[in-house]
Image (cartoon, rainbow, N blue to C red):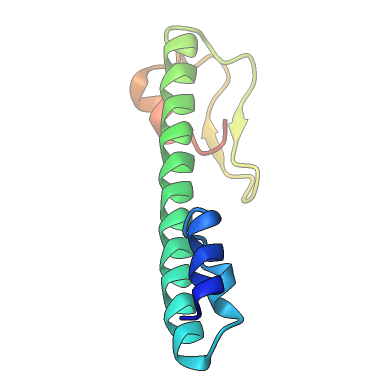
Length: 101
């Protein structure tokens, strides 16, 4: 690695974009590291979405438990009837319908 490139690499906190414009060997290695970082960020994002979705379902279940449905509950996509009007909402029923709420 050229001295000015190394200096620029350190100055930017080790960001690999500087290396991408360098020789093909360094560029390939930098690209592989960057791809690995992108994959890790995508996994982290998926985990965060799962955690937030689970937390939302838990909070909704706590809020709705013991209340009765005012109308039939249907699945948005299939229009399949999930719960009937007047059904008391329990943890089990809210778990079955959590993907709809």
